[in-house]
Image (cartoon, rainbow, N blue to C red; front, side, top):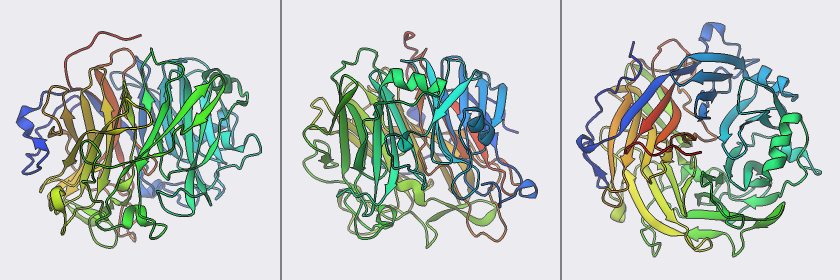
Length: 508
């Protein structure tokens, strides 16, 4: 058993033109402990549950408590990793007054959780009977909750077909986006796009009492996979926009977001600006941003994830590979000041790669967008994170209140089990560079599930958030999957708090 808080010696990254040696890393793993875990194949009833799925874990903090969600449970922990309460997700939804069963009659899936420090409330979103949006009655997650189906309101339509819900917030509102079959955005794949809602803070708080919000501020035809930013600025002006971001996709086919070869991706940025209880989306238009520093030209090429027809990565001790196809998505968008931070995954470019260079394994592409002019964002910094001995997947980005950036991702190879890695960029580091990786926890066992399946599912297809601690802005929390149990279908999750620079003064 690996002890809590142990910082294991990391793999040495052999290459990476945008990386610094891991020996230069100054980050600290403050806390690291196991979160929720899956049920064994012997107790799995696939006809009624989703036990063959990936864990779909997310975590948030209110300064003294943590809430971790998986499709299976809502768990509350203290900061030392003590489990205070565990509630099956289906029961949690029912207690909030909603129907947990999805249209296919199975358990809910793809949850997210945030703690909005501006209203002192927890918010959990998950796909259930439609799209479930649940809010706590106080800052205590073990108190009462209420819920609504937001997209069903105001004549809908309900987004109850695998909507892959995304959530963000700032001082001015809460922003909620979900997939809508039949919509279209010209910069992502055809016949599916996102709807987004912007809900005033007071109306979100009222959801805890099961009162429907009346100002949804809904828009259709947003880009597929669009992520609303989380902005912790307590001084944000009422007229400052909320930002949403993702990447472009080829439109060659419905699955071209993840199946393209040498596709020159670009960044997409949308905005919402409040005016009272309503507001305006995309004043000045949706932004399509070239990926090189300064955004004068494109630098990065997206490729189908490695390897083979299953888009999978190997793991030590098993011939069952791990599915990495979902790495094409932007998992989350963090904001500090006027800058947006994001990372997306890609398969390796093997020919005609230009300045990106040739790789043999999956990689991640990081971006820092300067949106000082809200309708003219541009790339301030960017980096490729890759290496001969890693296969990074499902990276989630966090930024502390000093501007230090961390990326947590998972990796497995022929000689390693599924492990959780950390890369960092301190504000004082040379531009366009990252230190790492440092191994947060090294996998000890392969992960498999049903014997007749030739592949196992990983992480989360909806997104993985990194939360900044609301009482200490130098600390960042996230959660990820790792390989710690060889029992079929027993996925393992880890909850991690890390610090990149020194301690900051506590924020309100």
